[in-house]
Image 1 (tube, helix red, strand yellow):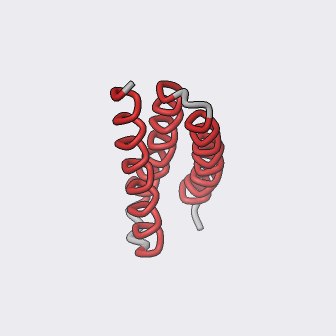
Image 2: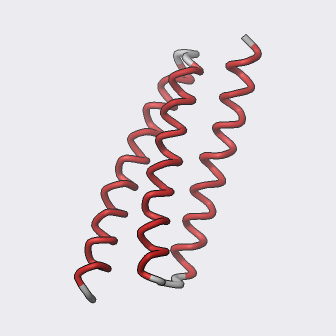
Amino acid sequence: MDHYRKDCLETCKEVYGDAIDAMKKASQDVKAQNFYKANMDLSAMYSYIETCHDCVVETKENDLAFQNFEKWAKGVASDCLDKVSKEYYKN
């Protein structure tokens, strides 16, 4: 594995950890009915996922398992953002 791919995997590991933390914070925000903050945390989550995507695209890896996971993670983030935004604007 070349140096760039190794760095990319390390970056993904770090930003996915950050994405998990952002989702946990968003969950707490929703429980507290702080939909504005939940929206910010979910946006951060999506951004973290996208950072890994950018890295993997640069390595020209066509890893189907990664692509499926990324699609799922982005779908979860997008769905949560939609729901939180609806609650925020409802109030």
